[in-house]
Length: 275
Length: 294
Image (cartoon, rainbow over all chains, first blue to last red; front, side, top):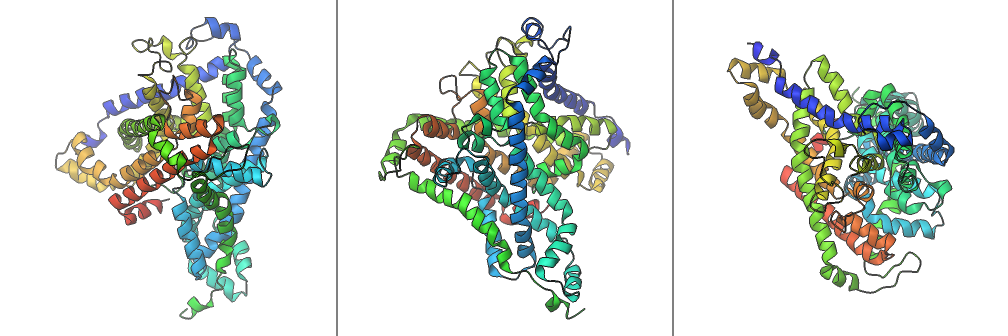
């Protein structure tokens, strides 16, 4: 009887291989083309193996603005994660443990906030940033990116904090700990997994963000990586291998995170959705 | 432990105040402002001036905007029809126990690691009629994916699907893993084949995941902005200009930010309506229980 389930699913396997080809071919093209010389890229078959490989394209990218964009991206990403965690961790603690009506309403507001599309408010965000003099600075990107990551982050943290047993809070109270100390010595260590998920989720959004940098940054020295890619697209119009090298380099940090913390990254990606 | 409930030191509700203030300032205030700006002739270089319902009158006659709205729905609909079956099948398949599935499915997730900008630009180069690799493929090689107005919408759908199918696959994979094996064993005893099992057990068990994934796709289709901007820039002509892109081009290339805000209000209303309709159709409880799943 078990034979029906154990029978190899040939059709499924072939389908999976077909999908693998769809996923892998462009990535193969990306890596191989970024390692070709310009002449070889022009004359060779796009999917063929190159006669010789060169790191020249990567060197060129590094000698351009890429390092600046990269550093800006790191600052935007770390800044956004920091702002989000500082705001959501205490708020999640209040939503889960406080009896006040305010924290309950704050949670409702955030649930409604889930449906605000970030790009629909890009004009007023531009106006606000110009008015408060932050336009064309890295803060102009960090602040709205963080704001639009808040609803989902709070949702994840609240769900995570609900799993902490109430007895632990009572034990803290018996030890005479204040709410603030409970937050620091009990909530923070026990909420590590959801905090990790939120960090990864927010970091990915900030690292890959496009619309806020596009509208809020003008100067080259403040540009982020995704903007830089679009710039390479025009600037390297004829140097496709150089542009592909820039794309490949922009993926490296996330690749590193994927290798180290695959589990957290995947749960961070699907944060809050499904089981 | 009977007195314990009263013994806990509870945090003040004000622990949530900084979050609320921040969100109000950078998300709620802009949302209010966009409504206000939709009644002005705001140009990023000058102060906004009240013009009453002028922008709304203009929107009524703006056939470009209506075409863009139609394209937005079209892309959303085709994306859903393409992505759902593929993600469902791969997700269910990769939820199986074999080793080769684990290896293959970790390769499937690679597009998730790329930014939308990187993906759009990679496909722009791949589809290039001169230097791209798709031109060397049999059968489809002669198609001008980016330059032919009849094809370009499908090209956008393809690039979007390439990016998001892995994500939805992940949803289906983890949901399929929670289906009790007993159900399949019972079905096998009854002599049900693989295809029957899929339709009688797997699909009904995954119905909430289908709903979650559908909601995400529909809301996502209203925000497919950067893919189109970088892949086709709305072209050729306006053949792939969707509503969010139309708004961006109007506001930041045409410097008519007031009118762009009017289009943005339409986007906000559409998003809210779609979410409401989804919640009504699917029931709020089921949505909530899905979100608690993590």
